[in-house]
Length: 343
Image (cartoon, rainbow, N blue to C red; front, side, top):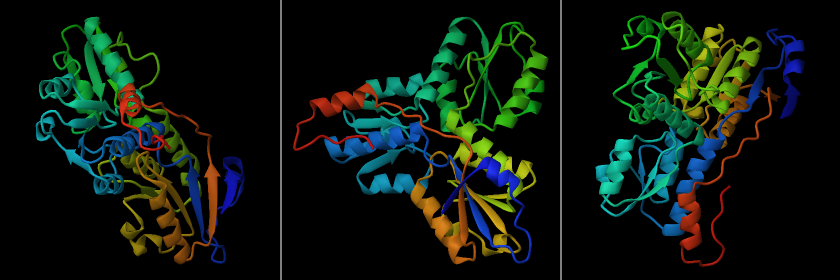
């Protein structure tokens, strides 16, 4: 595999000649973000420290491969806190939970380990602050997403969720001069920009967060697709159907006029997609493991795409520490050999 820069790629001709070697453009950064690494590590360390079973509310991250792998190790995934036996240990997913869920856990005397991504926690804190200061709150995101469910629960009486510019036009608030907005962390940069613009037109005095809520990894992966899509005939995004950030990557590609498909793994590739294709860009959503990307690369190599160029659009070196619940749990657990450590 050859590593090239984005400048090198942009200077190179598109390999669409009949004699040109078929190639794969492997985007970097791709795959696991810091919040996902942290969440998965939390479940693994909890299983190693306490033993199975460990209950997890919702999917720890939105990837079926990851969830199945952890389930095989003893994690039990539940949709509702009431499915967790009273007094048992439960982990909140990376997408966060509402205060109501926290209270339910307290009522059931559950031992809670919070794997909420710190960037999601940031949005929760902002929601509480805006509500406390008397703002009507507009939450930009997808209503059925676990993250929106948790953030909405922080101030449900003053919060409305919008998913499109059209929905902004019908918004009504008690005081149009006292409105604030927040966004889901895994949205399309372009889509959220358009919705924020519409909000500012409707409510000229609207305020937002001090820094954008869309997470660094979501933004970086979208920027990478934007930089490479013009050099590819096809974009393949490794990720599960319920992964918001993975779906957004496909949308970014299609919006630029390049065919894009979301695939769980190499087995999901339709051979017809590769007909007449000379260059395939491959990336992965923030909750998709690298082993699945490797499977896709292997499939493409076996189907005539002999050149694989890794295109690094930007460096990414973010790391998040473990939450105090898991650190304290490790320290207080009986030691049999060395304690497990985060990857």
